[in-house]
Length: 311
Image (cartoon, rainbow, N blue to C red; front, side, top):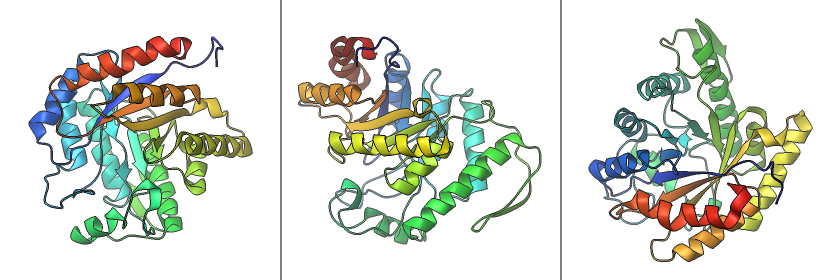
């Protein structure tokens, strides 16, 4: 881990917009936009609270992202991650194109399988699958995990086709497009970088085949040992298709504790030592005053000082 050729570590910020008003989210993003230590900013893609009382306010992710893109200048931005079950793929491709244009080419396309049928306590989330109530409330359907993966793979093909071709047809098992035209194209060509979130073997296969960035939730959802094991599994998938695993950024989102930054610094340092090169620092609401500056002073700068050549 002392090799001078190790990739640099970058830090992002995530404002989980659950029970938080727009003005507070905007405040944090604009503050982060002025801090070069923070390279990117993220929202999520839920329509109802997934923990605690069900009556809290939540703003729709892509609409909110578009508003924030128009009010910031530097930050890369995206949803960590977009649910593939909420929007039709080509509609999502048009939305993402619009955000990339509005932002001046700053979008990172975060994608995940979305709501699937899961047993209780799956994915490090205690209790029943929170997507069940959310999807029922919005008329959406949960699908088996294998179908979710297959749909995600078709979505990736659709996004890439409509982002690069003048006229695009697609005939898959789940989606069909005839004569798709998507103008203007994203400013980033052949399209925004693709981040895929997930940790199952079938998802990791898609990451190996298609993604620029792989993201997995860190502690407390997943332990360091589990993240390390999943990263090794991703390496194996890359080897099986002949892709250099170093081409994929290893990204972890980490929920920050405002009252114990020393513990956060220790956990993040261990993640970096394990090979993670992108840390998304996720804020719980309500956001304190100068939240982005606090992250820089209490987490990012001390971690960089400790890890030295990692950054």
